[in-house]
Length: 319
Image 1 (cartoon, rainbow, N blue to C red):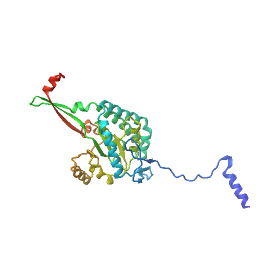
Image 2: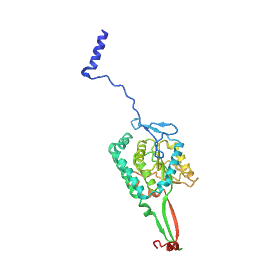
Image 3: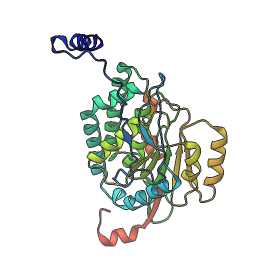
Image 4: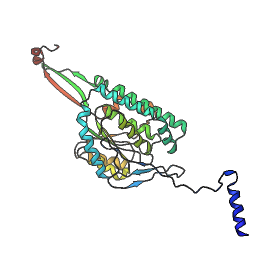
């Protein structure tokens, strides 16, 4: 009797050749987002990870919790790339930024999906990705123009020609906007003017919305940008901000939050090696306010040169 009941049950489940047994719940395999240093994608040397969630509590990914050593490695890579990148022609830097925009255009769907996972609506995500592409093109256009605008020939009383030109500061550490609805656009907006001016950088991405930052590193890696020009770390600003400003081989630091205690600490630490500190704590990156050649000039040094007129006369060069 028992066997007959079991057989009938099996027949009912498999009738019409369709197995109606409810599937076992599958454990989702989260993607591991690695950091980007020197044109490569290492895992954090600390071996630590964290799992950001969206507003609904959904786990998004395994994300590296970068350490002080990761930052040091990134600074070494940025310094090694500095002379080569600053030595390229401004026109070539513009070509490379434009190529970055092309690569981002080709992966729009992935960025839109990641922004939606991080609580954006599809319409807002589409607009943000389009704005990020346009921002790269904007700064690509400025690469070979800002020096013409901000250079000058200075009047002097002696028989000299005196002129001033902007030159890249060097290695720039950037703590990207953390409490920002536009995690991709704000990231692109702080990186693009720094590298357009010939600097290299180390960037700490948004802690709670890091997905687009690492995917943007994949865009950089598949463009013509040399390894080490942009290095992207993920993790906690509370752990890393001190090192971003204390490192003696970093020439300037950009901080994008309003934490008054941290801003005070940054100013005090920067005094140790006269590091330039720039605060972007009230910029709306989603508007035209978020793009300007003045952002390029924030990480430029003005070099002034004196040249005797007699030397120019004797050489017969354009005088």
